[in-house]
Structures are given as C-alpha cells and as structure tokens.
Image (cartoon, rainbow, N blue to C red):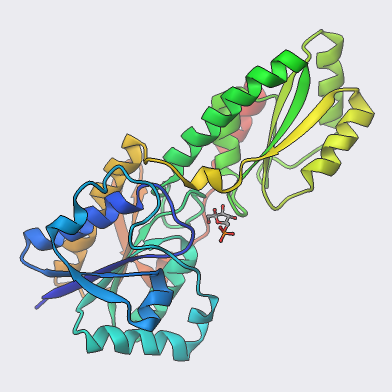
Length: 320
Ligand code: F6P
C-alpha cells in the first residue's frame, strides 16, 4: 500500500517544473497520500533534504518560472555507492515512491534508484526537448517562445542597421530549439546537428541577398557546435555583411511557463501518481506520443535516443 510519495526536480531547470510539482502534490493529496518534496534534486536527496508538504505549499506556483524546490547537477550519482545511499535515505523516510522531473541525466539517476528497489516515475522536464522517450518535454514551449521574443527584437535592430545576426540558442546536443525557432522566425539560416553548416552554401546565399538588396539576415545557431564569433568574422570577409553575434544563454530557461507547458505539466504530474498507485510495480517514465500521454518502463526509456524532427529541416529549406 502506497502511503508516502516524494517529488524532486533535477538537472537544468525548466519553466513548468513548478506547475508539475503542484500537480504531483495535489494529485497525491487528493488520494490521501502523504506528500514530500526533496530540495536540490538528486544532490539534496543524497543529503537528506526532504520535507513533508501540504496543499498550501502549492499555492501560486503554477505560473512561476524556475523550480521552488530548486535543482542541481550531481554527476557523482553514477557511482553505485551514491545511488545506494540515496535509496537508503528514501527507505529511512519510509517513502514508497519517488517522482523525478528532469532530463535524461535525471532519468538515468532515477533508473539507478529503481535498481536499488525504489519505485520511481520520471517526468521529462528540460528546455532542450532531447529526451528519447517523449516527443515533448516540459519547458520546451516556453523556451521557444522566449527565443522568438528575443529574435523579434533583434530583427528590428538588424534591419535598421542592415546587419546579419548570428544567434546562439541552447539545446545541448539537440537542434529542436534551433529548428523550431528558425521556422517560427522565418530565419535566413539555421545551423544545428540536424542541419549542419555548409559554409559555401551560406556565403552564396548571403551574397545573393546583398545583390538583391535584402540587407539583413537572421541565422540561428545551436550551442556546442562552433565558435559564432569566428563564423561572424568569416561571413564579413566572404560576403561583406556587417555581422553581430548574440548568445541567448540562460535567459532561455527563465520566465513564466507558457499555457502549453502548464497543461503538459498538469497532465504528466497527475499521471505520475496514477502510475505509483497502480498494481504494476515497474518503474516508469512518462512521455507524449502523437498528442497522447504515454508511459514506458524506465529501463527501456533510458536507452532511447531522441528522434529528431526531420520534417522540419526540409520545411525550413523549402520556405527560405
Ligand atoms: O539542459 C538544459 C541546459 O540549459 C542546456 O541547454 C545547456 O547546455 C545546459 O543546460 C547548461 O547547463 P548549466 O546551466 O548547468 O551550465
């Protein structure tokens, strides 16, 4: 019988994490479960930062960015001694199941806890949308809107000064933020793992634009691929375009979650409690497939690679 459930957020924070914490806590309380939060992610779990909470804890957090139970990265969690210690802390608190909201690193940590006999449920929360077991993660929609707001503003000044703007966005090693932003902004170029840089093609295009008197351009670049300042210099030398670079950085992780992220967080949070309460003892992760909320065993999920949005790449090329 399930009496106590804990929830934590781990890895890079993402807008909508608070809405999801709220949903997990409220869905648990509604079923008469004692609800706990773990502060500071998997790191806090190892340190035993666990507290029982009631409904008041979840008041007025649905619209707040960040995560009120904080987050952290703990690479040492891979060490079997560390995950075993975390499992024994949960057992000391007599917690029957743990719900973890985060990206694939968090899911791997949760899987290690499952191997130590803890029932876990993983909910995908990261702006990167790079989790293999889901088509959509909590935080992606808000981060994309934030990028679009920034690019809209940059377009104004880039147009006024007839410049080329290179804008670096996050995503770790996944190009979804870059591809979606390029499509949403009608950008002149996008560079990401799924749409790699072909220098000559880019330079030719920019020269052609100049020749046709279109004197400003937006190029979206995924992080961790290349040095945008070096590329800007090359663009200037090769095309004559006055070029500036912008790194949007952690601004992309902040802000009030979009309605889409809040609704996704609510659906996934409530589902996590259903999974904990079910008779199936398997530890699971939650995802979205074809618009439906799905779940699958965590051991399987951590082996899955994110399917990139191939269709988008072709669409961007078509519409440029
Ligand atoms: O995973 C979210 C993310 O924002 C990535 O896009 C980025 O590469 C990374 O986190 C940055 O992490 P940190 O803030 O810990 O440096």
